[in-house]
Length: 287
Image 1: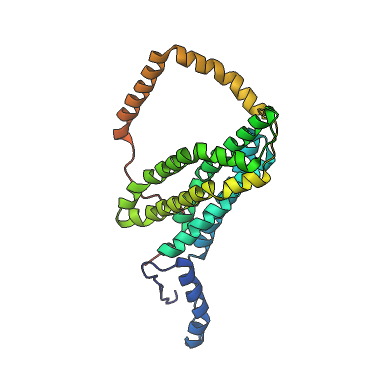
Image 2 (image 1 turned 180 degrees about the horizontal axis):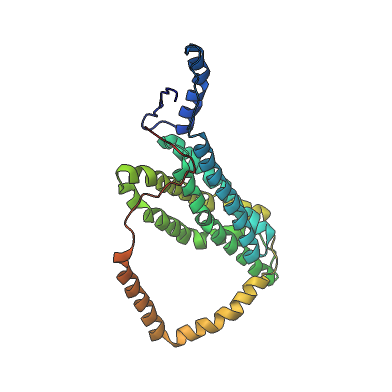
């Protein structure tokens, strides 16, 4: 039964939503002071919760992903030093991505941060190959009774895998190229993610070929190579499967071809909508 006026503050295209909300909130006291007596100003909807929740979601994903990568590396490599060398790639690759985002004028929004969260596993690929090969070469020289020169061993290991690492990471970056062609709202949503992943992967490539070999030469300790319990268990079950597959080549190729045809047959039934539905949990009403 009371008269009300609903006002809205609109953000300009390209503005940072959090900065806009903070600046509007800072002006509310000034607005209240200018209102006539008996008139009350009540914010009924603001995007602070949405922005903070989005950033919190992305940050949590980054932290959890980093921890999971560390655990998986330790389980497969069985070597804490190796895992530590590889993990260094994650924060530094993200740092390279943030520097690139600053240079290209990209904001740290939900989609760009999601790109980092998605790319966590891929960021360490090059470092894993580099460290594992260096560890293997050191172990082989140690097993032959040689006095292992760590710098020489890492240099030889790096020369062996530098090209494969570079091509593998570049292929991942190229895969994201079609997203740069998106336009409209889809482009606004997904281009930042593609840019961020490409920048992070470029940073991981640079680190895999420069810093990681140096850290491997400084930190890795030559010792006999031994499979972890997990790897040994996997090998015992994988070897019979591999032998069967090599002995039945036509069946394996036929099954792969059938799976490809089946996937193509399902293509018409896939959704073609790029836009995700936002379940914010806040009610915004208009009259």
